[in-house]
Length: 175
Image (cartoon, rainbow, N blue to C red; front, side, top):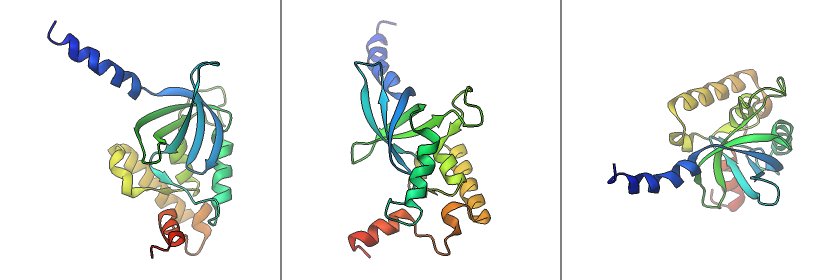
């Protein structure tokens, strides 16, 4: 047992970091990025969050403003559970965001905000990063996007919706 104690003590901070934490959403930048306040008053930390598994239209892109509004309606000034296994190159925590559904405001946080955005056609499933999702999540997100396309929900009403990654590339002139 003594041999394993140092390893256990080294792993403890990683386990604490990996555990989901409850935070208050205090800002929404767009359909896939928000700002959350975590911790206790007087000692909280602001965290910039990029939702895992989705890419939403940019603000100046068609459906960008509607996507931001849909995210705001879902999470702004609400407590969310953040599960953030990584940080992106911009220093944002990449997180699965769970919130209480509007249909059950006193219930548990059972709504995956990213999946909800794909379901209502306000974001794309970001397949390039799907390896960071579980097999179950990949299946759910793929199904949600297929259904949203079939129903012409949200951005899928557009005759030729441009994925944000292609739109950003065109804006940079990388065509």
